[in-house]
Image (cartoon, rainbow, N blue to C red; front, side, top):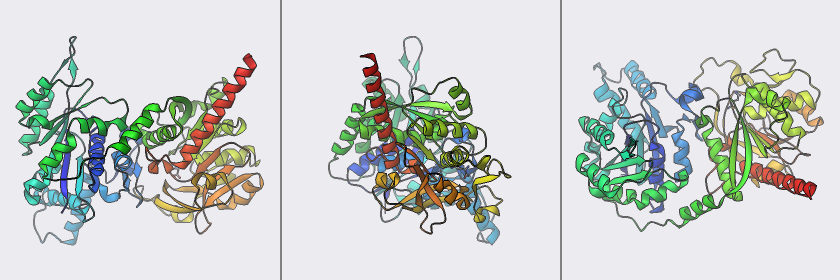
Length: 543
Ligand code: GLN
């Protein structure tokens, strides 16, 4: 039976609880343990799939088509395991299951209550990922202690220790130690209050992870240990890191994995940090600047593009380059181009999105990249924008559009497939999860992947319209990857361009810090080449 680590948070949200949990997951893996991770989210939505990115940030898609919390992206990137829809459970999905059981009569006439029915269902969700294939399950509880919605979750994880046995459960509480006042004093009071709140729910933390801007002194750690009744070595300091990938090393130095293993009475071989250390060295050494414009709609909240940003960084690590992201509001692209701006950009990403706002800007960006031979990668809606751009301006299909934005378009080059037409429910009804694509030999995409068949995750309703395929191909568009039944176009590119490539999928969900996704790797590679050749040109002009 696997051991369980529960991670809760206090004081404020956005403390990096997910990153702390992910880093611990990685440390345990580096000790030879098999680890899986899970997020319990107290909000009522059944999943984050119907939420606006401004509400929630990116929706992370799993291979099996789960629309999940963005923390699962951190988990996958850190522990390097593919997770499933079972790795995320919300209050909504838990109530949905309980209510369905109630309608079927499964409760045999009993009054259905938060305790035990909701808490039992929460425990079932935890057990669902506790398979024989794992040694440790790390469960992060979203929100902060003190939230109204979190109570059933705290009750369920409290009970879990009784069910599983005290040596099989470790509670980690992540808090903030802020700097206050002109003297910049570090304050422990919020941590004390947060632990008191957790205790009032019957949970005594085994480990407290204190987030802080500056490192905590030994005295302060002792104070927290005394006041919160945890061992000296169980107060772990996660001071701000230079980059997120340094966190496992910092937390290991602070002894997080050692104390968690002690609590769980787990013995493991010594940790082997070499690989992760070399990743962090690579990250630190990645200093060659390269500027990538991200043509987004939700750019006020960078978390809306979290996996895209991480994928770009990974691609930078691969090339020893530091990717600087230029956040460009899609609606402003046409104006910026008219003013002659966007000239210092080495490459572009046109990411996914929903709704018409900014779509014309994305088309303009695609055209700018095509005409000026700027490397450009389109993701999902990005493929739609690039297809429409090509149709309008190269294939001469005036008025071409996606029927997502113009149902009566003269040339619906992007359209709904039949199986999507009948759908009225918004939640969970898109084309979701992993699908195979067969790549066309000799194309850039084929060369980039280096494999004839690839699998990528999807999340969309609209597709490249096969009725327009031959007309667009005659005009020079290359369909470089199609679904195995050849019905759907999965990748497009141009032959006479350094890198103008788009995919119907979301490759950003599969990039890893030490294994940049090939599409991002080659985008950044092409951007670096362009930058180097422009620098050379300007040098020779000056001489
Ligand atoms: N809105 C488009 C669709 O539904 C693209 C979705 C996306 O970019 N993920 O097909």
